[in-house]
Structures are given as structure tokens and as C-alpha cells.
Amino acid sequence: MDGTDEAALQALDGGLAPLGPGWFVVNVADARGWRSEQFGESVYFEGAARFPQFGVNVRRLAPGQASGLYHRESAQEAYLVLRGSAIAIIEGQERLVRAGDFVHLPAGTAHAIVGAGDVPCVVLMIGARPDELTGEYPDSAAAQNHGAASSVPTDDPAVAYAGVAPPLPARLDLRL
Image 1 (spheres, rainbow, N blue to C red):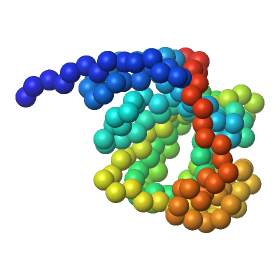
Image 2 (tube, rainbow, N blue to C red):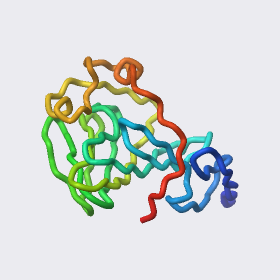
Image 3 (cartoon, rainbow, N blue to C red):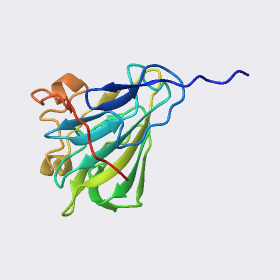
């Protein structure tokens, strides 16, 4: 079996990203990031070529900021809280999660996570990427209470996120 080539990193708006497939090493403080007024800050480790089997990002959420809208999808996800605290809304239930807490979300589990406490939290997020991903944005009183719900139940992300400003590339200082 032959080895895999190293992917070159390219400086883009918001930080470094791989130019193509292959292995690479990049510090979270140098990787490409984006900032959203509503959904916090995130560092992605992918370039134009996405990882085929899973997605991974690191999010920084100010108190009250959700990472995205309450949803369920046909792929499992996992969160590891690295710093601070957050409220995980899972199947309509709220759970306080703190640094060191791991959250596993099997495929089909409705969820959202919202920054809590007095300081921003940092969360490592990993999600599977099946060949066909389906999902929906169900109604949830708990998610609505935290501003993390679609205005209407839908299975269309464009409808769920209608009116939400797109994130902007941003260099983030997420040193761990």
C-alpha cells in the first residue's frame, strides 16, 4: 500500500486551508475560520475538498449564541466541550454541559447547542458524512427559548436559515 501525499496549505481569507486531499498539520489558531453574528465563530480544517467521511470544526460561542438551528439529520454527531459551558438541547431537553463533557448524538437525534455562563465556550464538533444526508428542523419550545429554532418546521435548510446573514471569513484566536 502506498502512502498519502501531504496537502499544501494555502493562506485564504480567514486563515490556512489545504489545497487538496492529503494529510496535513495546522494549528487551530491558524486554520481558516468564519464569524457569524448569530452563530458564533468557527474554525474549519477543510479546503475546497471536503473530508469524505466526517466533518470537524471548533466553535466558540458567546453566552446565548447557538452553533446553528435545532435540527435532526441522518448522520451521527458528537461534541466535546473544551472550555466554558453550554446548554445542549437534545430531543427538547436542556442539559448543561461543561469543559470535559462529551455529547454523542446518534443519527436522527434532534439537537442544538447554545453558549452559557459568563464567558464564551469552545466546543469541538464532529459529524459523520453519509452518502445521502437528510434532515429536518423540527419545532422545539426549548430551542425557541434560546433563539435556536427555525421559525417554521421544515426539511429545507434554505427555509430554516432564511434571513440569516452568511458567515464572513475571519482569522480567529482560538488557541487551546
